[in-house]
Length: 439
Image (cartoon, rainbow, N blue to C red; front, side, top):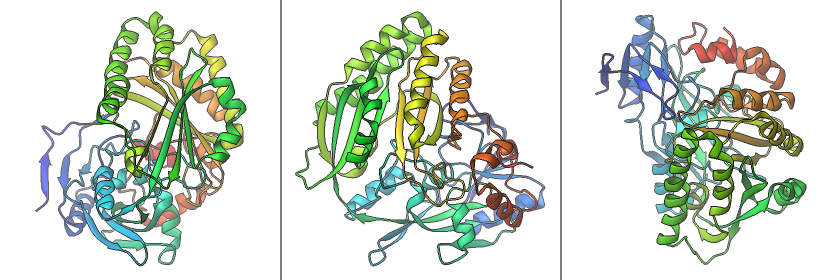
């Protein structure tokens, strides 16, 4: 039976702590049939419907004062097709459970983001991505989707079946229906060799095209107030497996990247003048290391320090200019930025509202420690990103609206026309979708 959670104890809060909502009711359906019933009942009661995963979005994309669908019970693998090399998984399955289950079966996704706490449907609906020269976002690996639409029908789509829905619904923002199952392409489990090392900011930018071309997955973190970056290159390896040792892993990933970093953030929040000195120390704390492991153990890392984030995709060719402008802005502004700036890439894809739709893209993510004022920094950064026709991540802080998106997404009208067809009464609308898609 689906559980309905009463609203009096029902304040919902996202992971970053910057969005809250008080839905009229929260429902945890245990089957697609129960979800269909919940959608139909909401429509009869005149209530809007939103599904929410683990709340890792920093926008109010999942917030509602209507019915909040919690898909935790819609979890697990429906089936693996070894001939087609696909896995079909229920929408509420956390990525970490999918990754571990696939590894046990000798399979893996081709690419993934750097956290794996999210549900699969939340991750794909907002365009979660990692970094890759040829391999794109998690949504770019989708081969089929099942969703419950506004009239309560269950719609399946793929390249062959309802292809116009498939083109848009892979990153659907929760606007087209509620995703109930996803079919991903998988491949035989492989090993990745990770090489992490510091590199000067100017050198990374000067050599960026070469670093991108020579590595399957290249990313780096720049520490504002310093000329230092930490680079990471992940490439397929024939082995042998050489995972990070337990002590070294704890020291780097838990003690330095989470423990000491957390303390540094507290100090920086209390004494902003100390931030540049902390940044110089932080940027030198992580030593070079190389290790080889299965994909999800290389791509993902724990994130225990809470933050708020803005991320924009700019054309890959514009990356160096954009970053230099960002550095100049920080240096001149008097801002104190204690969190590194993360830079990744993705190849062009064919998903209507993907941040990499139709263009090779570079992602620049700016963060602030939770509880630290972030508006001045994010506003100044956003001004730079939008000057380069940047596209904001759908689940991260931004101030753009439908008018802006209609300019930077050539296929924006395709998406809104499909939404008019699938949800003419706007059952799945909320304030965020009204802003980014128009009324």
